[in-house]
Image 1 (cartoon, rainbow, N blue to C red):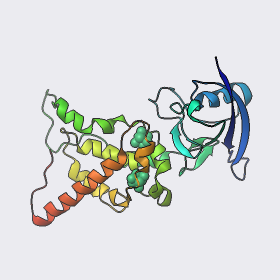
Image 2 (image 1 turned 45 degrees about the vertical axis):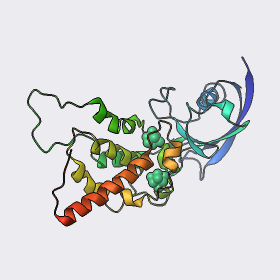
Image 3 (image 1 turned 60 degrees about the horizontal axis):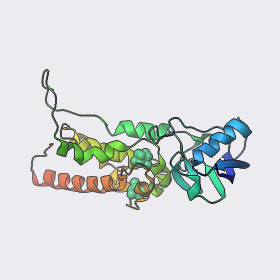
Image 4 (image 1 turned 135 degrees about the horizontal axis):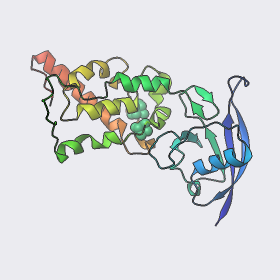
Length: 247
Ligand code: SF4
Ligand code: SF4
């Protein structure tokens, strides 16, 4: 078993005691196949039990271990030390208030995920004792956008969210697109009122940083650009008096 000594520089902050965040150094003996989350867990278990951070599954499913690793929003269970230098700086996700140490407050994005109406909306009555059938091809249209694990790395990378916290932001907009593309849904025009509003898709400057950091390849930037096109087409349809159509 190869051991590599990693110097971790970890941001600490206890709002009840500290005036400002500060950094603490830990020297961690790592195995070569460790993810950075393993190194943080080593600190917690062997060096400093007071360190606070979130994690749960260690298999890229729960989305709770998102942190800044050397300045990059990263899922720490998917970021391997073999790809990092000997000195690594760990900070809480950018653009969020700090709850304590590496734990951030996510209330704002939770409200945004709810705001985009992320569920099937039907205008007609659901068929009695019947299922809404969907072909594999129809599923394929939105499947990519179902892969989001709410790690919030995209919000930490998004310059527009950093400037304007009212911007709905990448993951919530990608989630809205997922339902807009669902063949069982009839809520696209209803959602458009929210998505095309001031803080919706038009606030996105298409930097694409959200898609670059996404550990699940959801590609929120593409979803947002597609919704801009949909929004513009819907606007012209209404202007020209065409009936709006839901799939
Ligand atoms: S593409 Fe849009 S949502 Fe994604 S990081 Fe850039 S501004 Fe933010
Ligand atoms: S879109 Fe990607 S980066 Fe954003 S919350 Fe979902 S999984 Fe994380």
